[in-house]
Image 1 (cartoon, rainbow, N blue to C red):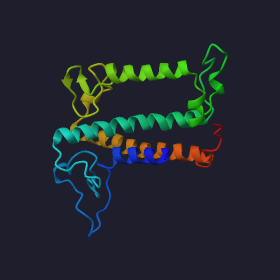
Image 2: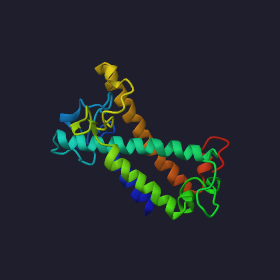
Image 3: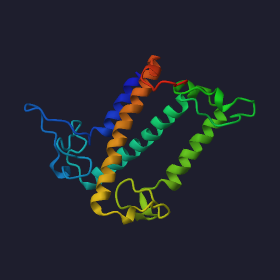
Image 4: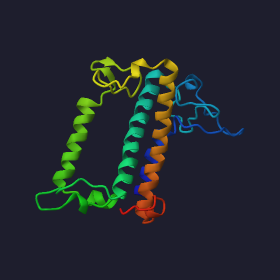
Length: 208
């Protein structure tokens, strides 16, 4: 049941923007109004099998794109974190006053059960702070961002404004594709972790 919920949430997040060929007898799923959007890339274009964009306006599309980008970024961090801890990398020292060490925490679902409650609450509070106060979809506070997922907030740029429009579009498309792959990748890691064979798909040397 739990795996089914994860699969449904992941597919719902990405399916509105994932490309796939259309069968001749299948219902029409291409949304004409958004065929030129970043992420609806040739040769397959825009595919919306769940009808999330039916009668959608630009605001609805931007909201879905914002959610897709955020999920993709979270999953890219998740995959990187999973692989890092599976390689045996841990913070030094203790994770609790009781003497439990970071090195005692396993990778994957097992690790989530081993983190002390106080530590888990700190993580949740920090994520909440980022969500409410830092990771806002705007370029400079109250003003709208340049695009959905623009979290610069007038503080970080990394030379973005120096890129031409073609380069910006390319980099945004690359991020979308990497995020989509990461959503599928993290789902696969979680499922195989529960099946007990995740080491079979990880690089040699993983210690979990």
